[in-house]
Image 1: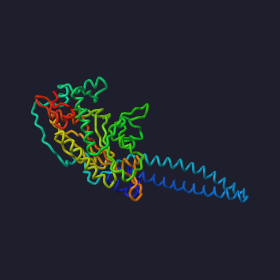
Image 2: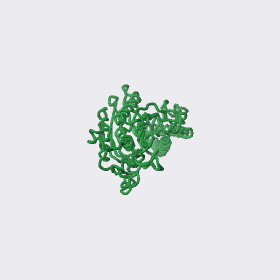
Image 3: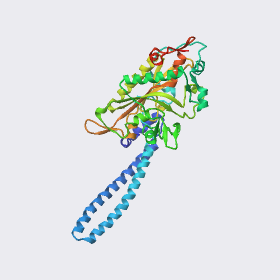
Image 4: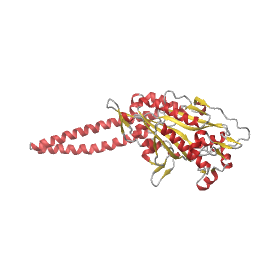
Length: 423
């Protein structure tokens, strides 16, 4: 959530920057400032009311001591009027505060000045690429045929058990999943991240704090009876560990790595681009999260980008890094890098990671603050990144490493899989 002070002091800047995300915020910003003015006026009336009530309370006691009962009773009557007015003002203030917050949460985060203009995938800027694109020849199989050939992932069985988008991993396919998870988590630990094993369901307050609600309500699985939400990413529970905390400056940096299953409805997704592992409702992912001092958050973002680069490089996959344009960025992000690997049989790039700095946007929602060296209370910055999401990584590994003898496992994974080939 944007800080209200930013809107008060730089309304035109907010409107201009949000236009990069293709959001026309002028009307909403105007409403927020109108409600804010009414709220502050009401707060002033309530403060004056309480000040007068306190003054009367002191005077009534003195009047009774002096035997001036008539004057004291007159003030008591006035005190009763003030209490009624205070109750009405408090109710009005609560309503205005709710109206203001309901408006504020509809505004996305401001994009960083380095965010490219645009709204289509082709408007994203490639800032780095590495690796050779494999030439598999005409007989190369896409991963959904390879998984059937080697009996390692069963999509039809998943349909029987649950529905489309819930595959069943078998034999070497299940072992490959487990190997990737352990590899990614261990690499995070080796880079100084503390491992967290979070819940797979969160409450409404947690989903709201990281920005999934209300923006992505329709994309989340909701457990109505208990009002819990299945997590779309470990970012949600891990970042919420620090909700409502007041940190010390010496607590930074906070670095967490977490494996979780992720659940996304992906409503409206269909067609060839979502076949096989390309788009799932349940999938495995390892997430890295940092809580940072505002002065250091962009250096931390580059550190996270380097970490994910190292993972993809060790998997021997051709990849590229994109700086996302404003219209392709998430609601909560200030600056995002996407990682894509090349899927040789599909002949297309597949997104496998987003690494983002949210600056103070999430911290403002979740009241995540710290005391700086001057004793001033400030909002922390939050960052996260996929390190990595498994489905499309597996798709690219299977496709790019297929040979007549079987599917070769990258050297970095062999200690984790216990085998060099899928046969």
